[in-house]
Amino acid sequence: MSDALDTLYREVILDHYKNPRGKKKLDHADVKNEGKNPVCGDEIEVEVEFDGDTVKDLSVSCAGCAISVASGSMLYEVIKGKSFDEVRKIAKVVKAMLKGEEYDADGIDLGDLDVLEGVRQFPVRIKCALLSWVTLVDAIEKADTNESSKLSTTE
Ligand code: ZN
Image 1 (cartoon, helix red, strand yellow):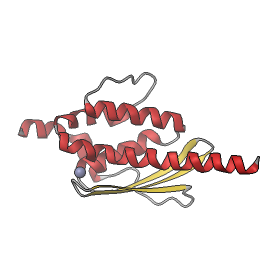
Image 2 (tube, helix red, strand yellow):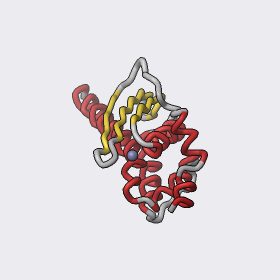
Image 3 (cartoon, helix red, strand yellow):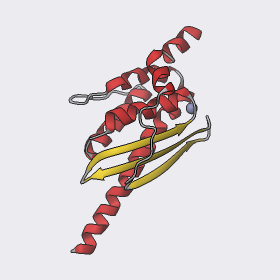
Image 4 (cartoon, protein in one colour):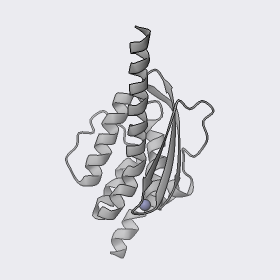
């Protein structure tokens, strides 16, 4: 077990945990969302600024275990500048990766995210790793709905 834990908490995760990349405040956030993982006590706040259907900038502030913070930090690096469709696709890949399901990551640069694959040996930690992704996708779905309601009122 301790060998496996060593693998899980290897350098990349600890580095993201100590220096979370997306921890900042946005001056012009278009949408905000909060998420919680009561099982572990992880709490997260995600802010997103859009440019059309692209994530122009985002912030990820997470207070929780190393896995939840590191996953949110990696999310920030991978998601910045991506379109909504790309975000959904990447989130799907991350989910499949964590659950040990098959996935197609063709054309996607996962950055450090492949490290999270080790988390699947610890089912209780999967929710920690998914927290930032669920919270982000939720935020984008909200914004997408707002956008379409704006369109329908201008028609
Ligand atoms: Zn956690």
